[in-house]
Image 1 (tube, rainbow, N blue to C red):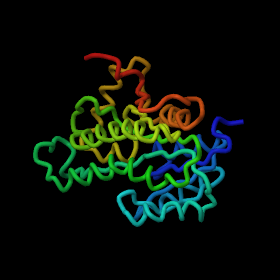
Image 2 (cartoon, rainbow, N blue to C red):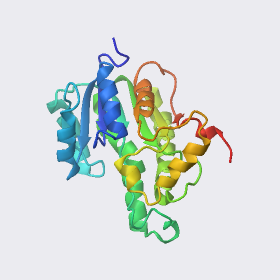
Image 3 (cartoon, helix red, strand yellow):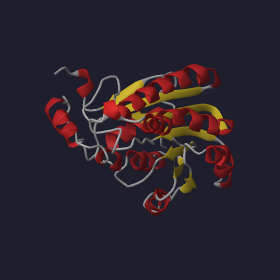
Image 4 (cartoon, rainbow, N blue to C red):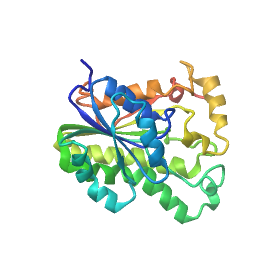
Length: 257
């Protein structure tokens, strides 16, 4: 019997089988969860194809987390997919314009692109959670994904600022929804070879940093440790943990220069 037996989990941002969200969906299903996944636009067809690799194949929803109509219709979409109760949400969506907001262009990024990064990468944690709220069970876990934004990183720029906002937003969700049985936590992963990482100019330098400093070592091609942490937080094994950020980075966050 898996640790998510009987639970229904919405996993957003599932793209390639190398994505963290895909691995979360895979392990969650192995642990007994009914999984629903989402994406939108041109990526939706890719998500539908990749869903066939999961066992059992999950329902796939069209969901742009910045689209108010999509958010308003989300409960109806979930019910149409057979979901009457939701026990967990995985927020795995982020975007910053790589031409203007990443790669060392921090000081010249126009506000329009800053606003987009904040909306997609941070505010959507709150808007997505609230869109699903009417379907929440008595004990719900919301889990977001970050790249530790307590410090600055080379080339990460406005995505780092957006992720800092995401981390803070999770703590406020924990504050305001905790009395209703909702836990909100963040998993801070080390660099992984995802589509998102490849879109960041100069991101290969992260591998050098982790290769030299992570006490446990770090395999940037393996999303399993990160996904296992997400699944653990979705389960009932952390019943009194909320507003927390769990590092899955080989221990690098604990080391100095």
